[in-house]
Amino acid sequence: DSTVGGIGGFLGGLAALSGAIPTMWFAMRDMAKQDTRAILQCYNFTLLLLAAIVLAFRGAYQKDTILLSAIAIPVATFSAHIGLRLFKRLSTSQFRRLLIAITLLCGLVMVYRIYA
Image 1 (tube, rainbow, N blue to C red):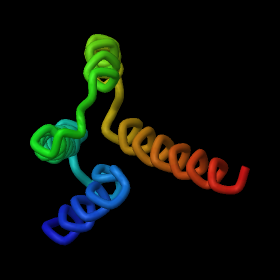
Image 2: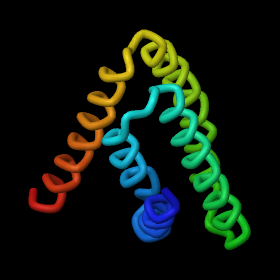
Image 3: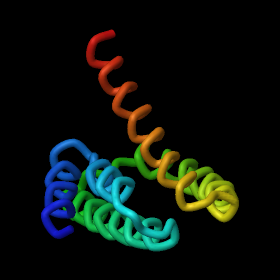
């Protein structure tokens, strides 16, 4: 688990893909959906918060970034609420399959964007 977290952290710093490897790792394990979600949510929140703090100290946020964040945060909050309602309706196996499908879709989109 620590190795997977370390690889995720490395990919997060390299290409903002901190959650990809841990998500795949937990999708392959026989864990309850609540445990998987709890671990992934804390992991991603911690890494993203640390990245935001480091970027703030380095002066990476400009006026446009702050404006776009002010728009994105309420939309993300609303979307998270919808996702939470869906999460409550899914069984553990449905949740695991959804994680795998979303990860695959994201990978396919990245490959498409590289070669398109």
